[in-house]
Image 1 (cartoon, rainbow, N blue to C red):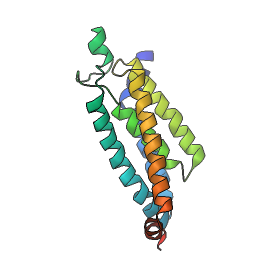
Image 2: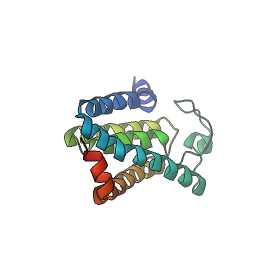
Image 3: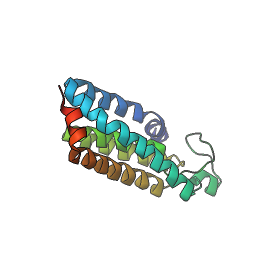
Image 4: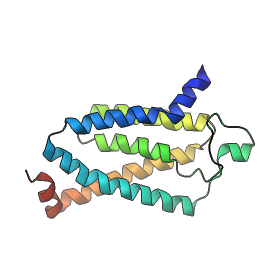
Length: 160
């Protein structure tokens, strides 16, 4: 039973998180949705680029490769740093923050569960998960700050 929960968390829980985030965003008025997209789209692209650069700079073999065991979730024996699942899960929590802080905290807890499941499944080290969460938090904050300080971007996102 425990293994089934870990596998579910490692592979499928992210889809539940995507559905929650979509529900929050589609409930927003059109202008707020546009403002969200103006921030979230470049943030997510930057998060992806930074994660790819980080994976080139730091190689961290997956635990099942180092330990010589079969993971609970099948995965390629490639670089595990950083975790794409944790990156997406963390990004979803960050993207909901400006609109629904309580739900964002719930998503952050769920993101930690996704990350823990990936670690327990044997496909990531803790550092892979933590690095992903740090990346999305910093990039989300930086891009939100840049947009908030840019009069042109503020005007575009608040235009009715």
